[in-house]
Length: 129
Image (cartoon, rainbow, N blue to C red; front, side):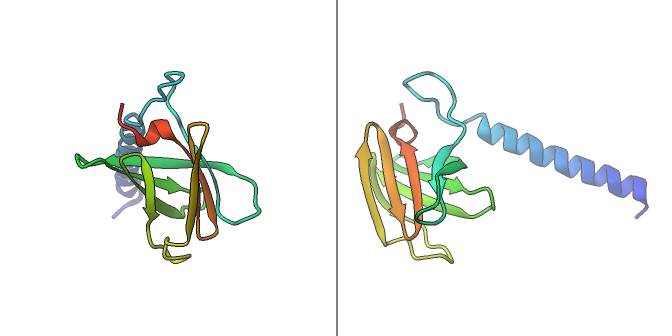
């Protein structure tokens, strides 16, 4: 394949991926408090490290289950599973099985520890308004 065709093919693929990403993020839930789209959640990959901003994806089903998949800057992903607005468990990853957890609800934010990671997930993401 010659260079112009290869470059054009790559551009089309990247454009499609960019459009799909933008469409997904355009469907993020809105905060009921201020009406602004929440772009990220607070997270830390290791205990004792400062919280940073992580992107996320939301998936809901008709049975009251919500999955928040948090994506760290380095690409690490972990699914946080909620049922009827309550944290249930986390997905299994190479860093742990997701059952060593602790969580509380403070001022409308789910404060969650899974293995060595920490997450702060606003309740507005969990409840489908």
